Amino acid sequence: MIFASIVAAAFLYNYFEDWRFLEKNHSIAVVVIACLVLLYFLNRSRKHKMEELDFDKKLKALAEEIAEKEKELAKTSLEMHFAGHYLTKLFELQAIINAKHNATSSFLINLKAWYQEEMETIKLFDADTQLPFISLLKNEKLDTYFDKHKMTIIGDISLCANIIGFSENLVDSTITKEDLKQYKENIKERCVGELERVIQGFNIYLFLQNPVDNEYDFLDSNPDLIRKVMPLLDEKSPIFLYDNGTVSVNPNKFILINTPSDEDFRQWREFFREYFRRQPTPLDNFSSPYKVMVVQMADFNVSQIN
View 1 (cartoon, rainbow, N blue to C red):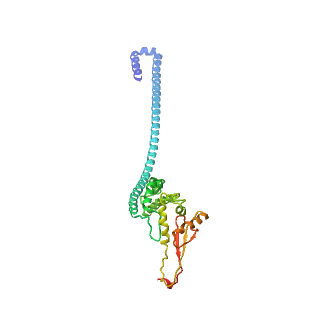
View 2 (view 1 turned 180 degrees about the vertical axis):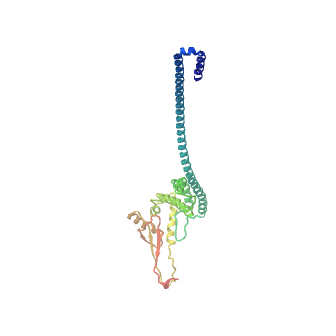
View 3 (view 1 turned 90 degrees about the horizontal axis):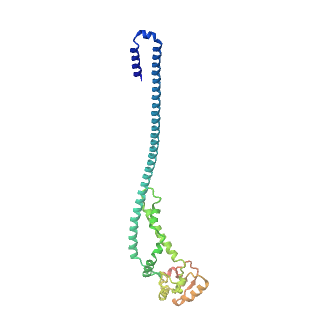
């Protein structure tokens, strides 16, 4: 636009180079030049405004881009924060899992060792007790009973749950022998507790009186067994000390049992007599319902003892 104005001015100058014409038409020339100058400034002002608008548009676009980048930066920072938090938790979880893995491995290894030890113990187990005790339990009967009821006995014992309980409070991977020993005892106590529940209600008097009607899976209910066992109570209750025979000794013999009622005690007194050569004095204040005890007592002087 500026270049066009200069060309127009040059053209007019050449056109009005006649000084006489200029003198006559001086006012026209002034007007033309003034118009040209005005056009120049108007054009300059318009261009300046267009540059300002373009600059504002660019500033607005840059501001929007900066805002978008700031949002992305904030989002990335938040994601990095969460990622760092998760990594920290994962490292903590890794330590816990390692500790529990070591505890579980140790538990399973020891469980296998315990099983092998118990299997060796079972091979040596004998229900027949040593003198002066007499047992109604028999190995064959017990083997049959445990094969039949083993799932009932161990049904509430979950080794998987026990593994979790065994390691739930474990801080590091160190497991002491005392921990394993205590855990083994806890398992045994659970089994013993279940066996105690099974024998609840058992009474030796009721079983001896009528083994057929009071049958238990873990005992031989053959009446012939009772006729064999009862005389042994008389044979295996001698005085432990031996006298020198200088004075005649008449020991007192007692038989102790737990009976449910007075009537049962009276029936017991009639029941056991046929199995003893020398009748013992019956006592019914025995606390245990699982056994019968025969005791002989005699008074000795020191001189009478060998």
